[in-house]
Amino acid sequence: MDNHRLQALHDAGQSIWLDYIDRSMLHNGDLERRLTDDVLTGMTSNPTIFQKALAEGTAYDAQLRSAPASLDANQLFELVETQDVRDACDIFADVYHSTKGEDGFVSIEVSPGVANDATATVEEAHRLWTTVNRPNLLVKVPGTEEGAKAVRQLITDGINVNITLLFAVKAHERVIDAYIDGIEARVARGQPVDRIASVASFFVSRVDTEVDKRLEAIGGDARQHEGKAAIANAKTAYDLFVAKFGSARWAALEAKGARVQRPLWASTSTKNAAYRDVLYVETLIGPHTVNTMPPTTIEDFRDHGLVARTVDANMEQARADLAALARIGIDMDDVTSTLLREGIASFEKSFATLSDGISAKIAQLRQSAV
Image 1 (cartoon, rainbow, N blue to C red):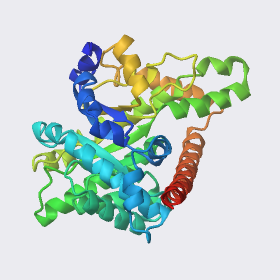
Image 2: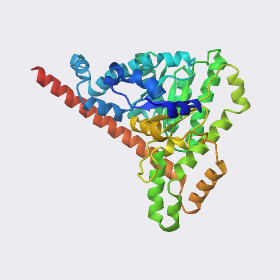
Image 3: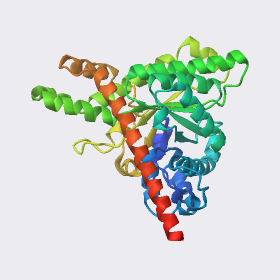
Image 4: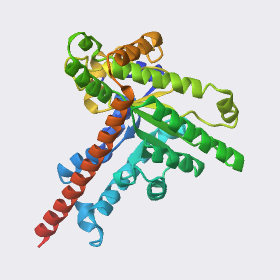
């Protein structure tokens, strides 16, 4: 299979991660094939993806059928997701070791109920980290203010973290600082930092979806700014990343072996059919970045994606685009706050649907066993 565009994307400094997981692909050789064919170096998961995987087929039936009857739906979900993520970590283990811990990660997410509770987030993250027990695991923590507090503690404790649901550059700055604080705490204790990893998952296409909706409501000339907010916002986040990890403060930690917290571009499938289907991949390519894509976006990029260093190109235009949006009444702070609230609510809904689905599946399996 021709993967030269995907290989060129990887060679440009961007890691390609798959935003999808199911048990079948972990055992039928499909994921191993994708490591070569799609130049994959990591994987992300979330409750929505697991809900779809559990609802379709019978891959999880045997494990659910044999699980202790005392486990509730949430505990059963954790049982199956930790098994899948552990198996995926093992498949990516060679990538992790060959890159000396730079890549080869698989993510698992804390439950939505702890999004605004730092202590509960830390406790759950520790449990997931211990249960999966793989060095190439990333525990996903929502990018709330409490989430940032949890990040600081988890990094201090030596747990790899993927901060998710980042929409605002201010929130991105908060989690960068939390990561650096955690690394400094480890250095102060004389603990190693060379295998501590973190990514900051900055969401892209959803920003355009929300801003474009507001521009449409304004109407008239405002609509000429549609499709510009998300890319400008993400480029500004990358500019912040460069500044923070180019500082003297970071240089002192890098000398101790610390690794940068890489920006991860999430929600990069195109939601608006009027936009190019690989828009949010092509416009955010550059060093030390990750793009987690669903299978269809990977296929689209393989077919016609264009590779060039774009993530830090035309920064003046990006700032001008954001300034123009502000002049016509688009409040990006309100946009990103809205998206964070909606993201957490969607996360909670997916988790509830998943829990209900597992309960229904268990009832079905028990009925068929009678």
